Amino acid sequence: MIRSMLAAVSGMRNHQTFLDVIGNNIANVNTVGFKSSRVIFSDILSQLAHGASAPQQGRGGINPLQVGLGMQVGGVDTIQTQGNFQSTGKFTDLAIEGDGFFILSDGTRKFYSRDGSFDVAIDGTLVNPTTGMKVQGWMVGASGSVDTTQPLTEITIPFNATMAGQPSTTITMRGNLDAGTPVTGANNYGAITQSNANGGVATLSGTYTGVNPTNYVVRIASVVAGTGEVTGIQVSTDGGKNFGAVIATSAGNPVNIGNGLSIAIPTNVNNAVNDTYSFSGAQPIDTNVGVYDSLGTLHNVKVTFRKTGLNSWTWLASTAETGTTVTPNTPTSFTFSTTGTYTGQIPAGTIQLTLPNGAASPAQLNLDLSSMSQLAGTSEAHATSDGGPAGSLVSFSIGQAGDVMGVYSNGLNKQIGQIALAKFSNPAGLLKSGKNLFETSANSGDAEVGAPGTGGRGQVSSGYLEMSNVDLALQFTNMIMAERGFQANSRVITASDEMLQDLVNLKR
Image 1 (tube, rainbow, N blue to C red):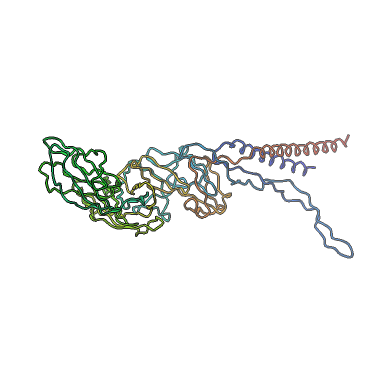
Image 2 (cartoon, rainbow, N blue to C red):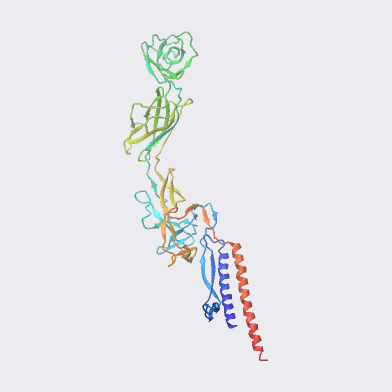
């Protein structure tokens, strides 16, 4: 009976431990990154009354006779299962989707945690604001890349950092060149045979020899008295038999006369006998694009397309900037297939800008026309370029691979660091150190450090926190089991006491 009481005492004591673990789990039901624990019971050494005997002389064997002496707590395991994610909207809050632990340092020792509630400290370091410990990883080196073979260091956000201008290297053209565009032509014809400052009598004629040759007759319809400035012309396409409406001119600039053609005539027709004039074919297709030099200065480049034959075109780059020259300064040919796809070389050529502002010169720009087409329809050409101006760091973001990307005022992004994760061969063997921290133990194994998403490590989700993995339904069920286990053991002590009382009463 004394043994039964002592066994029951051990049961009561260890079920109290069971309830202690359950209480701690329930207390941390809302603790970020908390991992619940479970109790494993085992029996204590049993007292041997007699040993076992083997079968002999036709009799079967006899099992050993043992009386148990109670129970004990065999272990308290940490359950390292994934907790649910809670959206916080704060991009410095991080959660690990999968295996791994964030690495934190107090300056001398390293700790490990699933709690990713981080913030930026006054010195720019990424820290856990509850403990002040700094998040570990790697910063971008002088080469502009992250070397994960180097020792860990604290992640620092350099808010005073600047980014030098990124020189443009490629101009990319997209769009369509109308397959029905007339072939470009430019020819001089005849001269003004008669001029009159009062207007109406001078006649210009000639034949355009591009696509669909036509005998054009152009008649000056009106001029400004005294100055001879042409203010209106009339055009005939049947050799002068019929003239259309008056077309206003603009101070001698080329005037569109229809069918994709234009005519250039002298500004002043006074005493203009034998002055030449010219017809020009379809107007060229122009597009402008901004490119950056090595100092981050923006330059405007115009790319002009002209049709020179069936499926054949030329491009020419130019700029209106004073002191800046562009080469090549002659048109470069390229072609399309019969289905309208680009068939020229990639890149279509190299544009060189000779710059007067002290930037690297000449600047080299590859022209990419591979996204251009020649199909029936409106001509539309759009150009973009890479590169950018100088900028300063204004914000940052953290990707799934733990890459810390700086966001600069010039709209460009640049990696500034890499968060590290640690993996253990036996994460259940880690020691809980409080404040959501773990430390290594003799049975956890050494930390295997690497980038998120590599070597079996999980990925990082920004704007989320991992909540506790405590299952309340299971904990309340375990609470009932602990209570009933404690109650049952107390009944054993009561029953043993009553039996002892009966034994004492035998004397009476």
